[in-house]
Image (cartoon, rainbow, N blue to C red; front, top):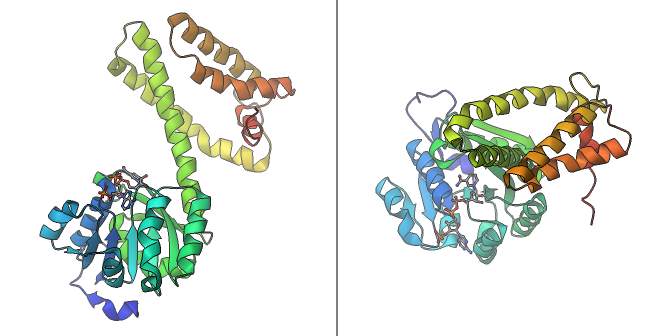
Length: 311
Ligand code: NDP
């Protein structure tokens, strides 16, 4: 299908970052995120076909102008770009594998979470049906979809991304292409989630410590936020050190950090709070010190994280 022939010029848009053409698009999956994606396409005037296993979830979108397809095959036939947002890759395969040859010539932009290996497998399976694949990752919550706060990243052939970028930008102006390798978007999602969950667990552990002493989480929140922001300020310098392979002890050594990490373990044990999270934090520092790297700066711990866990 010639995607260009299906585009219709729209009146001049008001947002310079947005597509000024109306391009048919299909959304498979109308969970919390899929509904937000379809609504954003509709807001930008793209003719939007939707399908969901539980068809009733399409009701409000149909009221806003979406077309409800009776099957995944009918939905795929409706548009050159098929945006998929299901629970995981197993559900993506369960929905798309039976569609078979009807995928020929389509581009599937898969925004469902999964590992980079699953993204490569899904890309290869769809290629056997003649479909191009863009791996995608949404680093945003549903209510920010379609705004400048929504960060969406894609990986896959650059030419395929370029062809569909104008309509994909309806989902968020923070849309970018990370590289040609299909798994790269999923891998970046995993890396960002690693950061976010470690930060959140640190906040919850700190709140549990203070809670054991009768301090409300709300009273802790401003200090916790300051700690997160201070740490965020170190990321760019640490990244440079990691890429250079040199870890000068500009502020504190791993030896100094380890002493305080042990305090955190002891405080947790004394208050009857879970001591496993700080023990997990101290473990790589213990290994680094045992290996004679206690005089290095903190970023030298990357060498511990590069190894698989023991046992
Ligand atoms: P929901 O649980 O709200 O929706 C899951 C969707 O998957 C529903 O449409 C569900 O259909 C469908 N589904 C699940 N299994 C199958 C199956 N076997 N066959 C057909 N359809 C199936 O999840 P979200 O919308 O929140 O998340 C979707 C994806 O987006 C996930 O991969 C998630 O990690 C990712 N994401 C979500 C974010 C969020 O804030 N919500 C943020 C960033 C990424 P049905 O309605 O019939 O159950």
